[in-house]
Length: 591
Image (cartoon, rainbow, N blue to C red; front, side):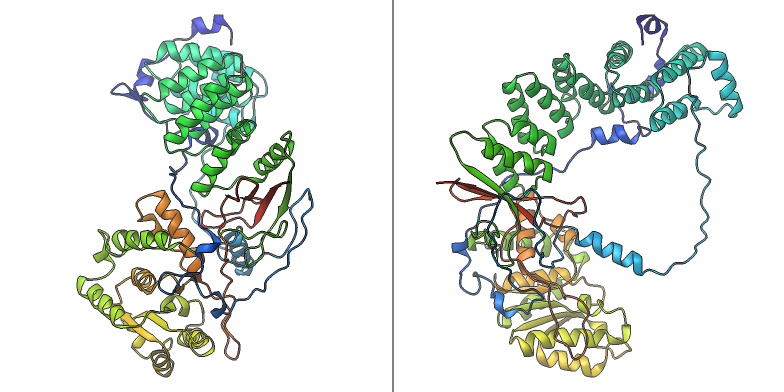
């Protein structure tokens, strides 16, 4: 876009008022997806998860380690293989767990394949007509004819610019569209310029970005986060990268910059040799409670502050993607005067690295961590502000007295959740009975079954004889039908001590969200992975009930004296937020 065109452009103050209120820019709801991805935020993460040690796992009942051998699992221990420098992750068998990366995706795929093929007729709204952009620049009279042929839609130029972006249209076509709009109306709206800017940035036309920057700076009192992020991205990849730093500083006056904003300028600073600015921005990003993108870490990992980066990943339960893990491996192996070797590996169910044979950190909480979590769960989940939307004061007090009078439980069973795992309604009570029998009769455990009062009324789902047998084998507490089971389950499990586990398919995400900070949420997730039992497969009469294995180790970045590192990494994009990776980078220094 030349200077002649700039002189012709007169932006619309009326249009700008739609985007600026009380001196602040408002978000455009019509930004294309690419702009939204630039501006996206990540949830704040805080430090604070303490490192646990294998030596702390052998505690006494009530605060001690879980009796792993008492629960029948569907997995046997693996063997330790010698670790070489393998270029791809090994294909050892991964133990089955609801928390294993990719489990949710695989389950969804299985259910989708099993679903019947039904032809459904839906009343769908007619989709918005998509404009077909021309293949060459058009003079204003031809643009006018094209607009008339489409029925003169009121947002013709916006829809056409959007179509140019999504189809990867030529920039000269977009320029001719701007010329047409300026000729027709004498103005260019903020939204149209923003969409044109998106096209320029995505296609790498940095000179045009500079021109749009001059236009928007001279025509509008300030820029919204979408435009600011686009300018930061574009300026950061040019010799004018320091102007991106200025835009970032201005953005902080009204909005909180995103990790992507910081990352773009950090990468530019590193590329141009200004490492002090790059690290200052990294520290600012961390102090703001944000978490860097993988590319930012990859850029910074070439410097000597790798220890701080790895500890940040550890304290915030962050897992590098495989590309970043490869950069970490290369960096360690390139250190002069130090002989580091890296291997891609997995861990045995007992928490032994298959490459070097060392034990990973225990999944069990220390006595201090356990008490801290117990206090927070009691305060924020069991006795939180919305507790009486889940139960009544009388029922909660009655349950506390019930638990106080009983011995410490080994396992707490969410009865309704377990019974509902069988889709055959006529076998729900039988399913629950088989699970309770496995725990009590075969494994000799003290069990509490939580249920609801409607389960005591004989029906097709709840056989009287089955329910009587359950009450004979286990301690039982039945809440009102309107009450929620989970707070009672968490209370009984935590009250019984660190050895107690619970049986449920519920992933407790709503309850974890009630906790006050990231460190406590991560502590809850660690406790959950080490204590939650999930029935493995179908429950069938005449066969032993099996449970998915509970890992004995914590999936977290960990080191031993600085001479070895074990880093869990993401090798798949299918991992849900409540799942953990199953593959590790093992780094060892020759002593």
